[in-house]
Every structure is written in C-alpha cells, then in structure tokens.
Image (spheres, rainbow, N blue to C red):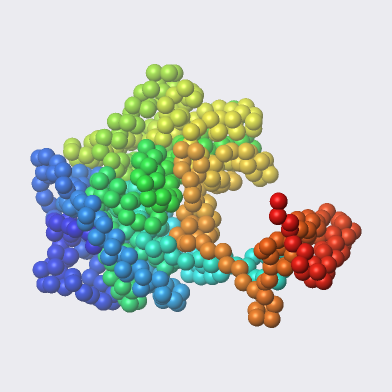
Length: 585
C-alpha cells in the first residue's frame, strides 16, 4: 500500500483512519465509503522548498497543494516485491472463474463511480472530465469487457500442428504466470495506466507492483484502494497488487526485483531501464511515446476530418501517447482544411476543468509549457506562422504557467524541432503534400514509429498509404480507434519502443510460454530411436538419415515413395544383421 501523509487523503478517508476502519473492510462498505463528496480536500500551504525524500503532489489546474508521499528506498521496494511474490504463489492457483469475478466487481464499481474516478484524475493531471471519461473510463471498461469475454480462451493451452516427422505426437503451447510484473507508468492517464497492466497481470495469474509517476502519485494511491477492495472481495491474497511512489532510485530498484518490466514513458528513461534490466536479463516492454502522423487526402469530408484532427491534437491537452502531432494535408484542400481547423480551435477555451465549463484543461508537468513555447519559437524563427489559437479562461496567478493555448501553425517543415521532437501538447503543425508517395515519405521521416491515421474517400487508397508507414498502429479514416479494440496489440517501433501490451499479445506477454510435446497414443505407440542410429551408430546410419529426410520432405510424391522404400530396406537389413556397426578409424 502507498505510504502516505494523511494530508493527501480526502476528509472522509481521514475520518475512517481516525476511527480505525482502514485495516480491514468489505467491498460493499467500500462502495459506500468512496462517495463523490469525499473529494473535498484539505487546503495546505505549499512547502517553501522541495523535500528530496518526499513526492510532492499538486493540482496542475490550480497549483493547490494535495500533500506528499514517501519516496520508497530500494530495500523497501524489494520488500514490497517479496510480499507480492508470496501472494502471487497463491493467486497462481486461482480459477478463471475467480479472476472473472474480480473483473466484474471492478467493472461494476467503475460504471457506478465514473464521476469520482474522473474527478480524481482531473485534479491530479488537469484534464477535463470528458477527456478523463474517454481516456480513463472507456478504455478501461473496454479492456475489462474483452478479458471477461476472451481472456480465458487465450490463456488456455493452444494446440499446434506437429509436422510430418511427429505425426504420432500432439504439440501445444501452455501459458504460465511469470511471477511478479513490475510496471513503471506515466502520469497522463493515471487511472488507466495503472489498470491496464494490472488487469493483464492479475488475470494471467501474476502479482504486480506499479511505480506511479511522481506527477500522479495522489491519484495512483487512491485508485489502488479500489483494486485492493475488489481483490479482498474475491478472497485474493493481500499484497497481490501494490502501488509504490518515489523517483528514479525507486524505479531502478523495482526493475532489478521483478520478473518482467512494463514501462510507459520517454525514450531516454526507456534506455536506462533496458540497461538496468540487462543486469538480470529481465524482459521488458517499452512504450515510449510517438510523433504520430495524421494524413488527409483531397477526397475527404473536410469539416468532419477537421473535427477529428482537433480532437486528435487536443485530447488531454495534447498529452496523449498516441496523439496526432504531425498533420499532412493534400495541397488541393490545404487552405479549406486549415480554415476549418482554425475555426474550431478558436472556439476552444482552456481553464481549470473543475471550476467551470472549459473545453481543455491544464498542462500536467510544471515547466512543460516552456518546452512547448520553445518548440513553437524554433518553428517561427525558421519561417512558420501561427494562424489560430484558442483562449485561456480565468485561472489563478499561481497556475498561469500550467496552461498553453491550443495553437495552429502552418508553413512548417522537417527542419523544425516541432516536426521532429515529441511535443506532448496542444499544437497542430499542418504541412502540405502533393502525392501519396510524398505523404508516406514525410510520415516515415521520424525517429518515432508508434501510430498513424490516414483519411481518404477511397478506403483502399487509405489502406495502401497506411501499409507503407513504419509504425505499430494504423487507423483508417479514424484516429486512435485501435486502442478501443482491446483484442489488438498496442506498441510501436524505433524510438517508440518495442513489445506490445493490450490484446492477445499483451496478455500472453505476462506469461511464461511453454512448448509441450507428448505421444498421441501413449502407451500404445511410444517414440523409439531406430536401432540403425542407436549408439553405437551403424555404418549406414547417415544413408538411413538421408533417405528419411527425403521420404518426409521430398518435393514430389514419387521421390518421397522411393526414399521411403530405401528407409524400409535399410531398417530390414539392419534388423536381419544387427551386428553391422560403424567401423572405427
């Protein structure tokens, strides 16, 4: 469980702590306990200096202080993993029925407490309630529903063909839990980024310890309580799922302690995790963000695609791993498309999402607005032009730097950092192209390779363009719809990382994959080594092998039959004269 200051908890949590009711509770009482009115926080003064051994938590939208959490030291992390490992050994024997019950309880709670979950996310990351619903609630519910429907099917033994030489065998793949998964997740979707690896890990029989970002620790520890209550309700062992807080040292300790690492974050940190994981040969899955291209051909419905483009760029204030960051528009419709996008963007107002009706929220990380402005300034210095911006509503003086107005910028090219570096902000750089070949070339001119979106009135054309873009996720005439199809894997290539989470591939990535072969008609037909190649090997043993290979794999039936006759002849001769052995040199 998270080590926390009581100042980080809503008032009703603190009341329950004082009454001694947090040690044990039923899931039904937990439903009553976490009411939306419990969101009322405690006003505290922001510390004058940063405590190096504590994770300080703020509301990005207002910069109000939420409290702090302890930075776990390496020994504490290892102890948490040890406790999870003990619990996992018990949970590994659980039935799929019990695991599905856990998922159903979570799904019921999420559906009935959408507002609470979204408000927690909004307070900790600055996103709007709509953005939280789209990115936190819908994605998580879809994953749970898919696991309920298909999860067991993909973890059951899977029978495979045996090939020609093993026709008397059966072969299958079995999937066993790895042990304890370690997940280090980003801050942009704190609810889903915890639930996504947790659901796959727990359903496949693993334990999991999740290091939440120092920028979203308050919400992460809140969400852990939901998981713990659901696990308790199905009789799961304690400590099967844990959330830990801290900085780099905490994450390094986790990487060195677990059986598999799932990381969502930046390429720089991803490389560090790989180096640390190499010491123990721990497998890793890396999702390192992207610079997704959004291609618009001249035969589209411009107003419709413009709306999709703006959502693709401004969802969660642009702080979206799969967000569109490069817009390539055919020159024939370039002017009309830009005009339509500018009209929409100018109608967008950013502001504190829980303080009024705003279309867009805050920038989560302190000082990130400065980076965004630096990218824009570099583009402007190289000839780009801002043609439209949204507005910022009433915000407190202390939170001015937490907002960046949605911005449309044109006359851009690939010499600009804005088209090369991941911005992670509400910026739409729009560039012309004149042919499908040029669009593909521009889309591939990136060190990232996470996803793309291609729009055309001719679906075959859109699919042809998308097939040539080097990335892990492609949406045809839509944006990011792949992630709502939870049967599909999610991940990229190049600096976007490798490995996959979500889908069959992500579920099985949490497993030890074991190949098993056994005799089909045991004990009536057993595998025996032909005497001709038993030790000591007969003098004509290699001739036998040559004929056997051709009998099994010859390109035509007559060659195979001729070779089979020779195999039978050699066996017969050897059985008639078993003393024929290879002569010693």
